[in-house]
Image (cartoon, rainbow over all chains, first blue to last red; front, side):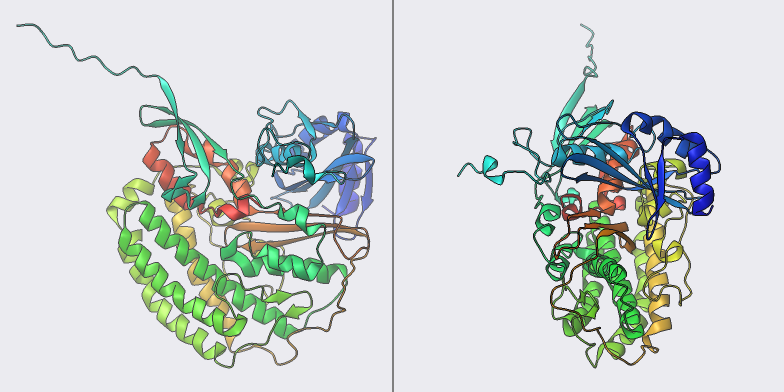
Length: 150
Length: 372
């Protein structure tokens, strides 16, 4: 599918989505409350069939936190980059690990380093750092002296 | 005489630790196993024992410096990881590297892939109790490391790529030695098959163990030889060619069984394909510069860049968000082992602990790539 056709069919599913063509991939921004149902459609729709989540990145944008999802269809070989942003004080995004199983670990990583709460995640714990670790290291305002006991 | 009644041991679930110091985890990975008798009910990986915070470190480093960190992710795919960062930077700056660089990068990466699969083969054999494999594999890998040492200056983590090209030109003996190695290894590889691939003990322990369907493999993001053993066509070299991969003929090795044996055979066949690729290029390295002259301080224009490459264990990705500074604003490494590890629980449920060792060996995880 070309990017234009992708745009049209995604807008048919979710009219509030914002699509723009980037240098490399098609970018899609969506509100976090709409994200889970759209994700379900992105995978199950036969024409879109985004079945392969090849990257999940948590980002600190300053005022907001966000997650960037790189999705590919293994049958049609088209790619879309989904961006969901959330409030910094109470960052909450619905989990998508029921749709793409690989997200389970990636979401735990984003929780570990950025403190993003993934709603309905089956096992949301820190994956790399200790449970007692203070703060979220990949946030731009992280104070590394908090965890230096020596 | 009284009848002796043998009571059966109560079948309750117990949990034990495997690792972080365990020879079959190939590094410091801790697995918490829930067991019923000898059967694995659940595997819970605990990562982070050697996490170095590389993604955070990159935020205060220039792109030339970051190259040296990417070696330390999957150290057996050091060249591929370096190249991924270089390609991202080159793409962002619209730099076209000389043909010579592309061809050399391709050859070196395929050599690294063979060396990595050799090390996997010897440790996989050793996990299953075949110590001989370990000596065979290391003996042959040494020859590749010697070639690397001559050209790049080091054996394991070479940092041979840099944005714009290569750190140094090829050693004058490079072509001769690579050709000698291919002749040698074509003769030796059938011995690997004789020793392990057709071994009845190994087949009993690998066939039908840890089966993953294609749909599951895609959902778990299982790439590389592990994914291709399940029939997931995920070779980045084929689908999104980079370097000189669009100019060479090679097959994407696919198997549909999805078990440990399929993942094993994919890697063995991939070594043959890698040799095919090298043979097509080794006599046709174009003359020219080995690098484009770059500014000492590289600033990427504001925007987002993504580059995918095929490392020895699967798809490696580099995602950069730049704000036009000399440091990246956010840099993320999509490491193949981290995604492959997430499938371990699904692969091992209902198998024995000994099968967990075989399955883990067939996934071929490298821990520094998980703990970035």
